[in-house]
Image (cartoon, rainbow, N blue to C red):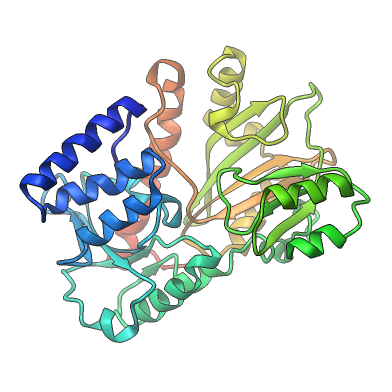
Length: 382
């Protein structure tokens, strides 16, 4: 994945298109442009380049850096922007793992997929993320994977059941996990619904906080729907999860083979926290608190919170997934989201966030060992 600022992306884009003028069928140039155009906000151009790259073959192979590979993975991807797939390329052990990405498009069917000549592989890994737009591809990927007679990590059918409004039902009777009821409604239903307390709303399918807002009254709801047109929305009661110091804390915990791993925490004066907009870089004390959490998950998640993590691990039948959560005023784990496609990477600024390397490596090492164990038959697929 190419990284860098807007100037670097523009220069990379110029070089890639220059290469295409010399070599119109350059697959490498089209794959680079799939990334670069997204960096520049040109999603349609990105997808067009990905489709051109896949013209000759639906499979893009990334060989292990050290041959022979310890494991060969057939990873199922959707032809979609980045958020449409789990970013395994950022966490997979590139030294030991060969990854064959098989891209599935909405126009495919079982017959067309069956005709694809597959390389040798040991295990299937579904990277397709849950979303309304992915439903057809997830169904197709599920039937395709079932016919491969290989172990399947994160089966498409199970991933498709992790919708924002379905997950809370798994914890309805829990004393340790609190998941506010999430309703799936149309715009007119949102406007007609009485707003007796603050609610959090977002368009179905939105990611990274796009369209996410707290609405406090009927007038704000009307304005929100007008400014964020969508076919369907998710709505849930707002929970004030501020800590005693008046700040909000959100934790990301990854699960690999049922075991939880601390990945990051973000502290902010604002309820809508994303790591990129939390003032972690500006506050050394925040980074020190995060470092303590990453060094010892139990320093925060002990007692009933540790029991909550055990409940989540048992209730979500996936080999690899993550949660975003907080601690609500009553001491329960406040579960915001369960997602198999959460971003995990090791590319933070080493000067400021060097303490995060060990946490990332723990997830990466656990995932590599789990994939290799499943491929060898020493670890059962969940």
